[in-house]
Image 1 (tube, rainbow, N blue to C red):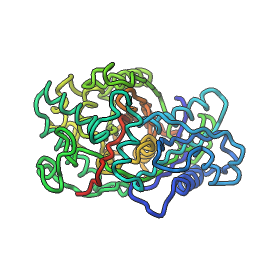
Image 2: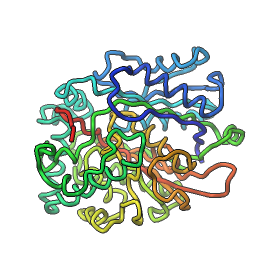
Image 3: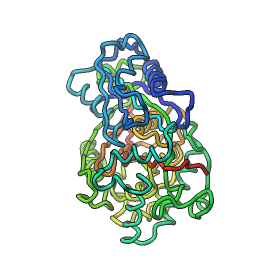
Image 4: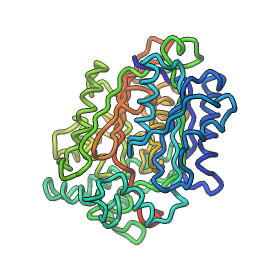
Length: 421
């Protein structure tokens, strides 16, 4: 065990015209501290995950967390950025602070506000997380990048349009039960599969329903060491974490193999002492449906090129052998770019601790896991309830053991045009 999650909070995903980065940060930080049942003076360190890249005019945002409570003044606060693994990286840094003995209690916050930015600028800002010498002029921004990946996959393994539509339909259906999701509507397979005025092609074989939504939101976790957690009212242990970083240029990687994610999966599972079959569900970063499809292969659910089997044979449905994205994923929840890690952590936390209506499957099953990939170039995983790497978790003060894995990957899709159905 590396640390425990003892408090959490997050906002719904959506478009919030009256909120700012500061107000979102203050809101979740305040709520997470209250949820943990501690005073702000008990916090030893603060880590903020915030990509920004131009979405907000305010920079140096780590200090904004102090606005939540005067007692946070003079606490060490650091901002972390690691593309779409920013949320995971922030949690990872919090865990390391605890593991080193430098802190007993760490507040981890993630935030992004994207909807105030015009569509073309969104694509431009997100491309800053790509290797600009190669990807900087890609039409459609990240949609174009993943359109290339999807097209290459189709060319090598055949047309996967049916599988992608099934993934989109699954996640939208799951999102209906999630009160925090931005889009709680079951579109059905036929709508997701068919091109229409409301579901046009965006890039390559990807349609609007293959892409996650532009969103605003924030999330926060309170982490504590094992001894401190034992005295808390509730706690979920993080059994193991793993982080693997790959090359940034796609020319130096096989874009059809999320190798960084595979390495992180293998490291985390080995560290936790579990196998993929021990997991009860997975929450993965489905910025695009093609990403979730390839992640099936990266985690070892299917061999290379056979990811479609997992969705077509029902393995990843809520009642399947390994439910994936029972919360609705980014397809339904929305995609405030760099706070996914914290949101996934909160989702995991709710699921394992048994609190909240999160749309997760079979709360009483024995094992759960959570994996997160960071961008196409790397991954961070936790097996645990609400962490962004792979960590096996178990509730403190109970003999039940549960594990959960969530792949956190890629920059979420942000379309250059509003994505409304």
